[in-house]
Length: 235
Length: 139
Length: 75
Image (cartoon, rainbow over all chains, first blue to last red; front, side, top):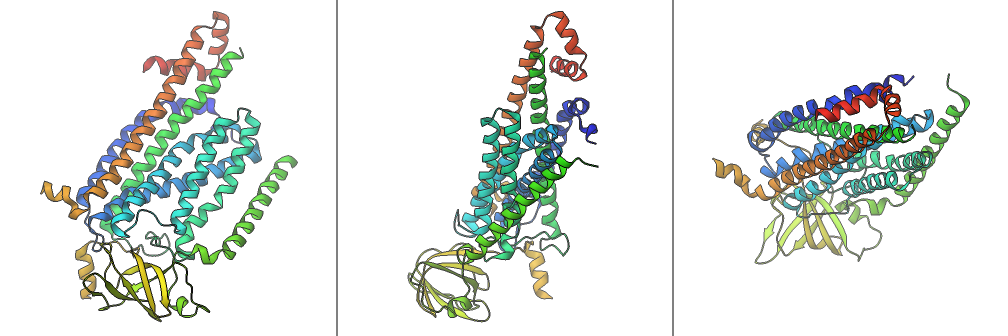
């Protein structure tokens, strides 16, 4: 069923793709940065501080998205005993972790001039910190355990426990009183963000997603070569 | 179809997930008081006994309520049902303004009076350029 | 004009440090990932070079091995 995703078959594509993705990423990022820093308007209340949103929000979205994907892949890999799913999950993790850190740091930088504090033990911010800890655990587990069987089980367990934190992060601003503002983007209802600011936000999201894809592909290729390397030993 | 082992593993993962979700749900439910970042003036009014610990009160700064004395700022936090007087000495954040969100951290003197040691501005999820805001207000 | 852009109503320090941190993290992650990739690739090439002809030929029956070698030579 998963034969199409056999590493041997897709390597031809994954090994060539990074340079094109890098090219595309640089273009989208350049346009996105111009929009975000220069062309987009200031906010009526936050003035130019609102520009931090263009790096903060996409990073948070992508790190949550990546953690969810890793969980889905690990569980599927565990149920169907598919090694490749674990490799994909492992390769996704580094960029997810870095985006999580970016979301936390830029959030602190945004909080200082607007809220008046770098940090607050608010439900949204704290659950984002917990997500970063889960990412760290996941990455470290891959380095500690050598035996495949064991590392697959342990990383799957980490993602299963960690995934519960994802809806909490997402809905914390609706469930409880938080310092963090509720979501501006709504798929079902009208977004509370003006189109002149939505456009750069979506552009930056596209750029960040491309960066994740780039890092994923490079990491995935590295993992495949590592496997083939071990294969040479066995000849 | 899938083998028996696949189905069992699926059931296994589902059970772990359901158990964990229930556990976390119960823990959060019982910790609700600590998970909320601030209380509203209405919640303060209905407190059975006065809390002497450091707490946070949040809501809107009432219109025309900000009063700046030599080294003290006085204002009223409202949730449109109840309100509470706040006094604070120190610098306020840039976004602190009338009819905007605010969270004050400090101590309750009584049910109507709060002495703040820290003021945080809370902004909402609406983002728009100043011109659009003006146009909206004219409507 | 340029001054105004750089001033950002006083928020420039915050805005630019947030963007700066983001871009530096990108650069860092890219460089680390690239280095790991290059290291693994050159390890593979070195190991392949040390194989005796018979083993090398049998390794070459796997398409992916040939591709790794070809990519390494092209870079």
